[in-house]
Length: 324
Image (tube, rainbow, N blue to C red; front, top):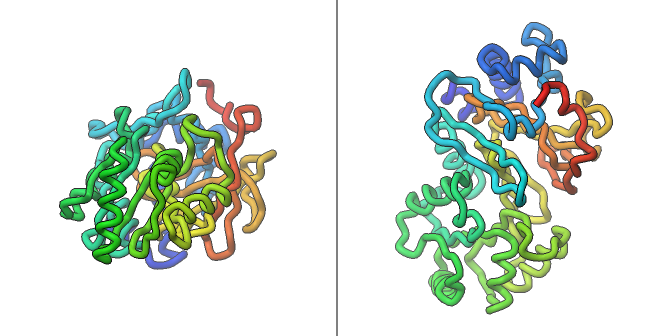
């Protein structure tokens, strides 16, 4: 099935693969099967993508969401806030994740071996179980560049490396959590010509939250670049969306976004309507590929999407179908 999913070429290919994955997960995932049964949805009745039930993302906090009987190779966990229950994504076959992020990066940015990767992700490095650290560690090794690596608080070394690489006209990707990127440009400003700045979102309680437009304007000025790239990923997904500017995210061919009505979570909205973001990630073959996230968003006609905010806990509906 991997070969089919990672070689999707058209909407028809995606629909056929998604319906096959739905059937597989309905039959092999006890949690998802119970959820579908309570909605009276089965593969025999589902003919279109929008008819597939989307599992509320909170179930990754309370249940083992598995569609495989194989041993778990790796458990990725979310950071969460102090006192909150972390999400756990149990992965029985890491090759799905590896193939997804490698092909995803290649799809949007070309051969990763052409880049030097500098990772400024202190909060992720400080805990266990981060799927982002797992991905970045592998990508850094794949570049085979001597200066690729993780940077913690060594801003002077990072600044020097950034400038040297840029002056040599080497293609460089600096990926960082928002607060750390802001910390860096408060110590030194740049005029970068050959570097992509990619933020992974969130202040993680380290700074006051900023709206995306304000954050990106500050980062553009500090790094001397015209646009800020962004990565859309989470513990519960094995694939990532990427934005090359203006907060407009695109999905790789095996991933798709839809929006649901905030009052009626079983109703899928038309494009350009704001609602809860549903994600189909076919790389989640061995867990659940159909996830109702806690993000508010809008899907454009070309399939790209924007993140407009998040639900607070009082706004989450449709998640009480199974007793936690």
